[in-house]
Length: 340
Ligand code: PMT
Image 1 (cartoon, rainbow, N blue to C red):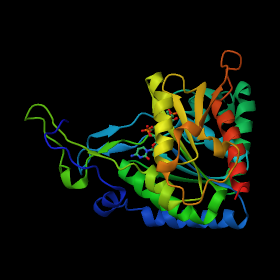
Image 2: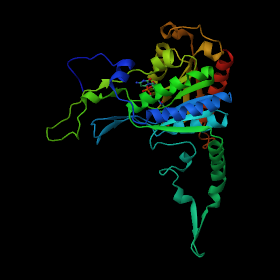
Image 3: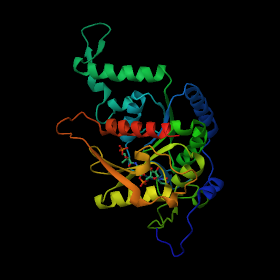
């Protein structure tokens, strides 16, 4: 993937001017607009949760693609805790990744056929939920029904990094009307590289010519326009995933200094289920409103505060760290919204 010439990375504007929108964008946006209108009129807080990994197709008639690691656990689990906290949730997730509620019955960890009993002595045969499974099912089902009947969960999907960027921009522009009542929870694992449509092979890449060399372009850093243009008042939380533990804090600090948003949650790939670190400007922690028009470059990393959040899975194996992450964010968002 190395190249002799170094190309300037795409800016967000160039990206949207040259890469086509997903075909269902207008429909998706119209539905979200209704959802936002209803909950804004009810003065309800809204959270946009992004979840799962993005793909980068290598061909127009796509056979092969690059993927980003993420099962969607963080996003789906967090969405449930935001619903419990009274938020209306827009859940924007990778198609077929985990979703709130149904995640408890994932085909790989808890397949639903395993919690059913059949009595073949009865005619027709009787199918029941095993008694050991009932308490959990009852709890999940009642929360699921509450969210669906109350219309507090709106779900939409992306597959490629292109879909993701178009949707994120459109949704954040729609959410502008919410002012400080909106929280962005960007847990999706977004590719840093992509193949522009103009460089893609139309048909399946053939293997006859030996090794494959592909030069990819850098995906524009979308947090920059999100923070400074599309939603100036929203409370924005991004995630930083690292595998080298020593990079976690410097990279999280770097993102915060560069984009000037409210919180970066750092997580190590291997420790993410029981440990995360919140990195935030001290001013947001205390709910103080930043100077209007403050540019990201003016944010001084010296003023950042790190807060580690850990749970003990040996003591409480059923505890989910997302419960504590969401509780802390709800508290900080409340301070942010009331400091307006
Ligand atoms: O789903 P799970 O299996 O539970 O895993 C959860 C998780 C580990 C994927 C999640 O907790 C997480 O860390 N998500 C972010 C992973 C990631 O994409 O990190 P990053 O360093 O590539 O990006 C950091 C932030 O920048 C992200 O909020 C992303 O939205 C943003 N970004 C990324 C690329 C890009 N071009 N523009 C961006 O703005």
